[in-house]
Length: 409
Ligand code: PLP
Image (cartoon, rainbow, N blue to C red; front, side, top):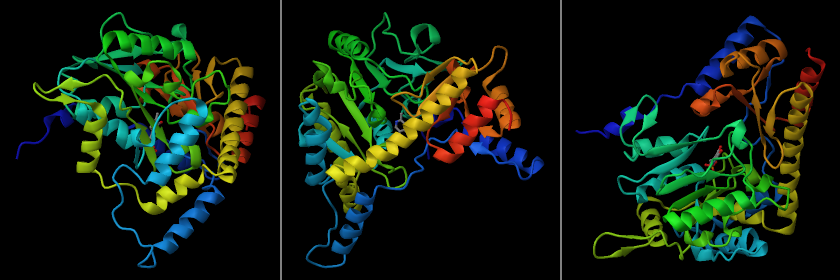
């Protein structure tokens, strides 16, 4: 058998296993230490009550022949697609129809699976630091081209550095595809209307496909910050948007998200004799390789669009945001340079001069018994930075903040 040799080019990631090892070694040597995890990238608040109720009812429906459901539509039940179109888009002035929405088991699979639609030889823009799935899925698919000491033939890394506000700058060269993520994981930075307009204008000019990851849009509270790329005129011609119920409604384990592929996308190519459009290609891809999200889970997801549902998800998000704000403030007071923690659950900080991300990890763990995530795990430009999150419990976060502010345990 000939295997996909591109897998050999994917870098091993020891980030989370190394964190787990260092924490367990520390605990073994410091029994009784109250270690607080502020590196969590997972929801910790329980599912909203409306979701639990809707899922219980859906399970009950499965018990009777009249209401039992087997295979559903691969692209999602109409009740959920309609609710998404109405509340996430039309209510915010974005003209996205239900049949442009593809319900899935989450944004990780969709961002990675979308590479099925790319041919060979595209030049792909990827931020550095970055949510690693964009890069690794392209390497696995053979789209990155040959590697040379961390650079790839077909990947243009868009460095996100303090001097550009940690935002990906528009390159002076052509990109066929670009990944943008706002609010950003790992930096917590959001892209403004002007930032996104500049990218959409670039994409219209260069016929670039924008893959916009809005997994954290629900954390945006500032009304001037776009929650969807479709708030920008022209975006429906150039952009696909990925969204997730994971952090919005605590579905990290329950699994549900969706991808918007507008029918008006002009980034359409031809295989020589037949025009191909991304909307129909994605539909074909999903109906061939995916059998849909369970009815029970989709019922749970649809429940968040009720009045009570919207109130309940806001409560959980407010908890995460207030944790993030408190962490940001504590490090600012201690003189650190900090990004995010505002309109985002992530806080990104510059580690003190002369320390690496991992050295700072050890310092925080040994001095304050606090665990975070070294920035170097998100790309070479993450070295010298550190990620913390607001996803911990309010009590533990408060305790951690007190430790930082007092400078002692
Ligand atoms: N996109 C970004 C930027 C993320 O940080 C994450 C999860 O951490 C995902 C996508 C994955 O979301 P999902 O749980 O829907 O697969």
